[in-house]
Length: 137
Image 1 (cartoon, rainbow, N blue to C red):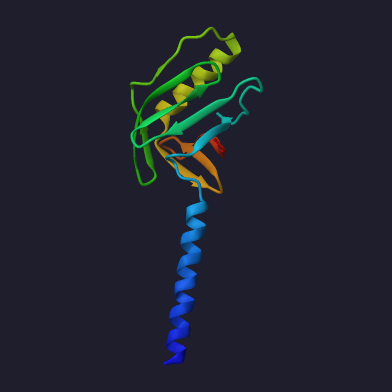
Image 2 (cartoon, one colour; image 1 turned 30 degrees about the vertical axis):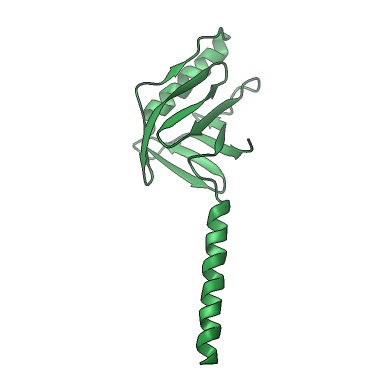
């Protein structure tokens, strides 16, 4: 009887430890994502490209302009809507090339993976398009 109680308690502690570890892992929704890699390169130093997800919408900054739009996601698949919009502030040509690449990346994304606080977007062939780190609010 005592062995059964000890085993039950150990199982409960293990389950609680696993659940606790899961809760500290970054989630797609309600996490601020900071771009760290775009097409295999670091983003321009003077830019701060962010991506934020709510239940069915995205928003952020493309390094020059604020943007928003829709997305859908199931398990590890992701599709960004064709309705992405942004403000129209003047940006340098170099920054404009970067944000154009960024929006193209969102359009090409097919799957995603979150590992150790890093969000990776992949195309349909499994090639990494962009990576983001979870950041504090």
